[in-house]
Every structure is written in structure tokens, then in C-alpha cells.
Image (cartoon, rainbow, N blue to C red; front, side, top):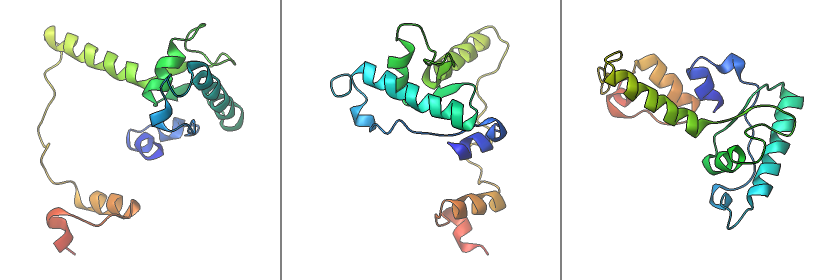
Length: 142
């Protein structure tokens, strides 16, 4: 998550990345109650705000976000900090793009360069960062 924030140019605005410490397979009401998930989100959000200086909480755990955004009082922590369901944001962005395309404002998504090999120095650096071997034609280059 931190690397994605850096990649998209928002790394300097990221306060922290924390987990709920609830396995994804347990993020369903038959295993973990919505109230337990809401309480856990509030606990983690409190640490993000108090320890890391966060001003907004982004939930990337889809089911946790659903439970939290549907709770009484809306998508705010018990401290009053706004909580954003990233799945909803993504869906709204897609809706916006479709509407704008229908209006002729924005062309369909460009596929130019989709299959082009990545810029070699960045590719090598990224693979090395993750401890991965090179693949494709670049593994034979010096």
C-alpha cells in the first residue's frame, strides 16, 4: 500500500498503513459480528489519528468497509474522523467515466503502450525491490 501511494504520487500524504488483524475469510457476519468489525476499525483508526496524524481513514478491506459505512451515524469513526470505502470510490469513478464518455467529453480508455515492455531501469529497480528475478527478454540483458 505504501509503494502504491508513492507510485501514484500521494506518498507524502500517507500517514500510515495498518491492518485490522482480522483474516479476510473472517470478515463476514457469520464469523465476526459487524459490531466487532466496527469496533476494530475504530481502534485502528484511533491509532492512525493519534499516533500517525491521519485526518481521513481509507478502508481497503471491502467487507469491513461495507459494515462500517452502513453503521448508525454514517461513515465516521467514534472520534468523528471520516472513513472512506475505497470500493465505493472506485465504483463511482467508473460511473463517472462512463457518463463522461456517453456525453462525448472523454474518449474510451487508451490501450496505447499496454503491451510495451517497461522502461528497463525502473523495471530492474522494482523487481530488485521486491526480491524478484527479471523475466522476459530483460533477464538476458546486462
